[in-house]
Image 1 (cartoon, rainbow, N blue to C red):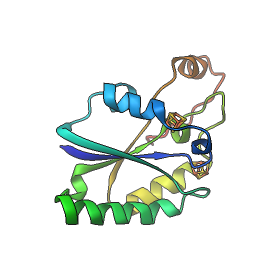
Image 2: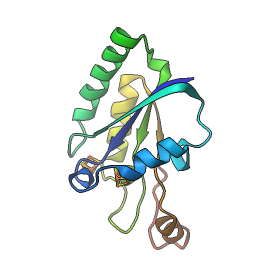
Image 3: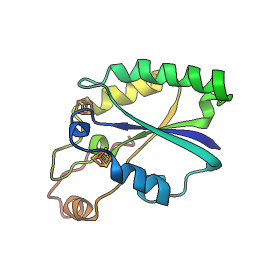
Length: 140
Ligand code: SF4
Ligand code: SF4
């Protein structure tokens, strides 16, 4: 049962994007949030990878784990890290994050579970299906 979702967004994309669609997908439980085993009172917070190459993410997540446990008794197994679609998907704006594998390795070192995608644009998905945007498989 997930009690806390930590959305990670691309630091560069976040210079422009306020993350509205990530939040919308979470509230509506659509796209990357569909079918998750969520606690009724699940909480969500968003932050960026910290900038290329994403190394800051490790210390952000370590601190998050510590605070969640200390203050709200949320265990590591009750936290899910969500990689925003601007990291995990190829679309009009750019290919998947060039440091995706490194970022996944950093998350794995924290011992937290992760999954890919937040909001999925229908137009971008059509482009990926048509092969216009070649999609790396983020979950691998
Ligand atoms: S996934 Fe989309 S809405 Fe979320 S931060 Fe990235 S660009 Fe913004
Ligand atoms: S490491 Fe990837 S997700 Fe982070 S700022 Fe660079 S391109 Fe964006």
